[in-house]
Image 1: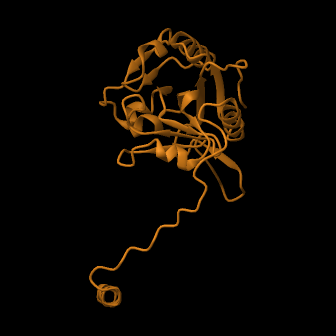
Image 2: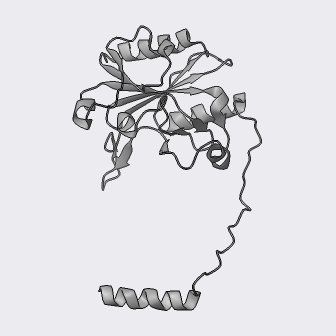
Image 3: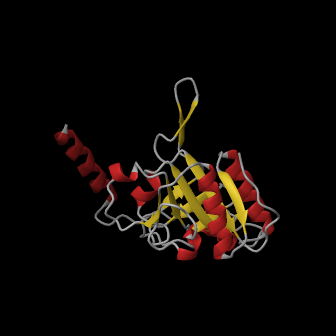
Amino acid sequence: MSGARDVVLARLRGALGTQPPAPPVPRGYRRHGEHAAGSAELVSLLVDRLDDYRARVLRTGEDDAEIAAAIAEHLGAQGIDEVVAAPGVPGGWLHGIPGIRLDDGSATPHELDRVGAVVTGASVAIAETGTIVLDGSPACGRRALTLVPDTHVCVVSTSDVVQTVPEGLGRLDPTRPLTFISGPSATSDIELSRVEGVHGPRALVVVLAGPDRPGTRDGV
């Protein structure tokens, strides 16, 4: 098998030469949306997408105390009393949350599996696709932190909501470990029955924090 592979690769190298020119990259795709980042139109669109994905959306003001109150109220209603937070999450977001501790990187996946919820921030949110992006920064936490616990509470500033994927990518460092989240983890079996929580948290709670708050809204 390896002999045939080597023959094929040798023929390709021979046809291309030692330094084949890189083909031009098409750049004619849509790179910007019609609305400014953080506008009311984009926030509304993001909420609609998150509702479609069965995420829960909590609208709050941008004050830390309001964010903390929204998180604590939701977790209390779910009976979750053991919570871990990304190490760079502002302390003001965590006030009043029972059983909260900051992640120091030592917990194993088995230990994280016994934690009810995780609280993180986000780098950017893309309205058209309903996608939240984490970049592994201290506020977003390590990847295992947001994949193992059954509930992920993610705080998104409305100023970080952009319209299109290219706009979102433009705000990210491609060398960082990026995680794109569009709703809770879900898949379907052979009969197309939806199964949640197979590859990540079963519940995604997005706390949208910003000055334009039309009223607290819970998604599905």
